[in-house]
Amino acid sequence: MKNFRDLLESDSVYVFDGAVGTRLYDKGVYINRSYDELNITNPDLVREVHEEYIAAGADIIETNSFGATRHHLQSYGLESKLKEINIAAVRIAREAAGDKVYVAGAIGPLGLRLEPFGPTSFDEAKEMYREQVEALLEGGVDLFILETFSELPLIEQAIKAVRELSDLPIVAQFAIQMDGNTTFGTTPEAFTAALDKLDVDVIGLNCGMGPNHVLNALEKMRAVTNKPLAAQPNAGLPRDVQGRQFYMGSPEYMAEFSRRFVQAGAKFVGGCCGTTPTHIKLISESIRSVSPRVSAASFQGQPATVAELKPDDVQVVDPVDRSRWSAKIARGEFVTSVEVLPPKGCDADKTLDSIRLLKDAGVDGVNIPDGPRAQTRMSAQATAVLVEREIGIEAVLHYCCRDRNLLGMMSDLLGASALGLHNLLLITGDPPKMGPYPDATAVFDIDAIGLTNMVNKLNHGLDLGNNPIGKPTAFSIGVGVNPGAVNMEEEIRRFEWKVEAGAEYAITQPVFDTEQLKRFLDLIDHVRIPIVAGIWPLISYRNAEFMHNEVPGVNVTPEILERMRAASDISKEAGRDEGIRIARESLTEVKDVIQGVQVSAPFGNVKYALQVFEALDAFRSKAN
Image (cartoon, rainbow, N blue to C red; front, side, top):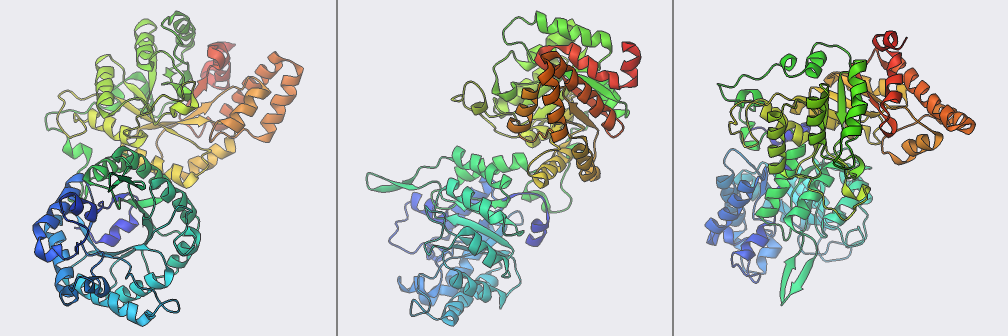
């Protein structure tokens, strides 16, 4: 099993367990007794809780020792059993964890006021923590988690107590209130900056509020520290239901926010009060879908790759043999494609007629978007089948995660393979609120990274559970990438994960700033796969303004905006012609650093798209 510090250096995301106290309460332990004492009076019950969280997918479990300090135990007459209780807490957790899961020694606030506002001195607080730390170390923890703190002076004493006895990693977590600050009014920026200067390894939030408040605070914390972040919120705010307190945050709600925590910079996620193994299971599945790694159980030795897991009797189809599109990319040849939207109704004749022009011109493929901007159109998969069967040009099927759960995706992909479709562009998809039906619900079981993992497994003859499917699929795996992303660090990290998951080529967002594209290509040179640039002809100044201001990650340079304004002032046709001219110039500037181009057909008019290809020698000769 790896040292926990090795996890801090990796790019993956890891899952803590949920609320131990909540589960013990659910199992009939009333709140008028010491939950820490259960380590010596009912160890089997505590072990059962740990095992539930491990089965749910937790990579790290916390010892049942949150309140096992002298002051808390005194109120139950248990102070003489402090050492026994803490050592037992580690032993029980270790028995459940085995060599698969890490054990964190949990330490909470003392429940005492420190000087100058209370009778307890800093040294006295440190000694109370030192007493607990010694016992947890004797038990054999892998790390310490100091959680639910509200004041800096107190957590500083806990940190000092750990550091005087151990160099094990420390996760330091504060709790916030409804206003986003601690009960003492300390802002997330302030306590994060303070912790950043102390000898801790991870800074985080737990308890306090539900996931929405934690996300807001986490985004502020990321701006003031480079240390890994952790998020373990309550399952929403408790509500009184017939005299009992219930946490109303559903497992699905918590899982959705876990992805947002990761996007905000969290490396560790989990749950606090009100979270159960069901919450952690969905959080774990959500995190696994965006973190390309195997489970902690595989840390012994080298993790098994998809290639190593494939059945012995499965022969993976070579990219050269999957499709003409795939073969050209694999051989390093330049590919050309045009994006054509599926028809709005059930009559595809007009769309198919326009695509015939592309085949006659020698274009390699037709990109079929999957509900772009959450619009309702004919199924992209059905359109792709019609294109290939009736026109004879290959389709590049965009496939998004928005509308289908894992089972639906698996069924779709197996069906696409059976129908002869082989070229995929895997994308997360635009949320429904962007479209004309904002009340429609999204699924997002996984995102594009998880979907890439899924398709790569199918290509190796495996389903998501690593079960054989017989004959493997033969998909050419493409992914999206945005050279103009606002958070470039996150974009590159996600691109690295997509490549690790099995991506074989990438298609960019529309590019109107060629220098920006070139800079991006330099940034991803260490994980470079073939890049197909999106080159879209603008049709008017208004179109240019829309792309620049309302399409996330798209940058239209001031020079191009001015050119489109001047041309559009002359006439509609002049604006369109200037847009095509700009697209040709852009393609000429980048054609030597990319391996293909995807051109949009404005308003479905492929003739305009074909004019852009005149920047390429192979098409220029045909046009003349």
